[in-house]
Amino acid sequence: MPSAKDHLYRQRVYRLDQEDSTYKSFIYELNDPSIYTGQWNNDSLWGAISPDSVLLKEGREVSLLWDEASHVYTGAPDSATCMSTLRGASFATSIITVYPRAINSWDRGLDSTVAYVWDAEKAGYEFIRQE
Image (cartoon, rainbow, N blue to C red):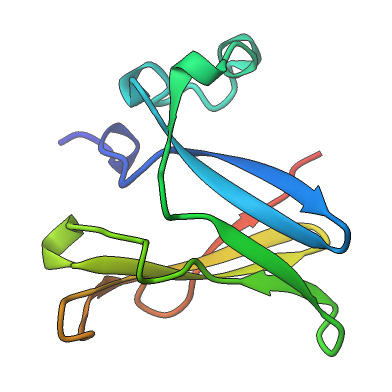
């Protein structure tokens, strides 16, 4: 039986732009994700990614705003432009939280009646910065 690493849910490339105290996150799909599967430690492969290697996911931009009370950046895409057909969804939304050393992304798919059809079960995916 193949491991989960051989059947990834998704692989993405993110770009962050800064405008004053706000960041904007842009999401890209890899044109040929199979090349990168299992290659997390291949620095030369990841270093060779170019604009020709990726495709912008239109409508998935997220503006990340500073939350003074919790000292984190938070944001979500505009659900009206974040279309998705994954597992019967009509659109997707995410709640993004950026901590000093981690990013949490809680992705959810909703149908046309705004009922949840898929999501992370208990919390978002957490990406912890590695040195």
